[in-house]
Image (tube, rainbow, N blue to C red; front, top):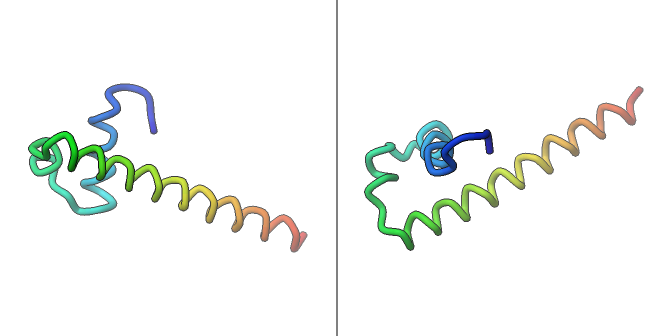
Length: 62
């Protein structure tokens, strides 16, 4: 995630990628928020692996 307030970064991601309103994200209890953050981390990890695979595939074609 970017620098700054981590919770704000997760709220930003939840809004733009998961369509969870910031108000709803902020009103989650700590367990629900922790689960959501863990799922966001998993999704980001998967997206990074997919992007790396695409980059590597492009390099092999050259």
